[in-house]
Image (cartoon, rainbow, N blue to C red; front, side, top):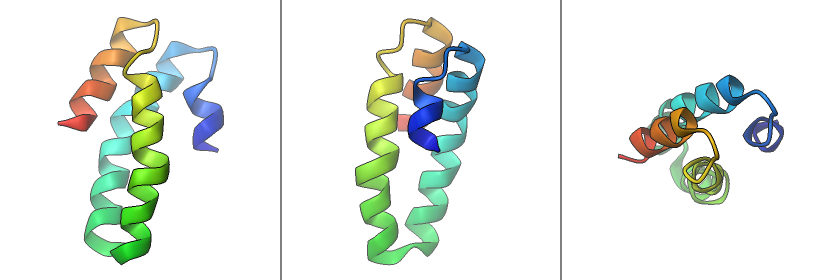
Length: 68
């Protein structure tokens, strides 16, 4: 589901995803153990890496803020 949203044609969908991934990563870190860590590396960071180079500046900013 996340992969589809990273490529959504509406930039606000991609922007909202970028903003929400920070909370997802935090939850996985706090409660996910080793599996949560793997999901952060394999899914969350991969998605943010794509969003941080998005054509829309709003998406890039949101993704960059989620990485901090």
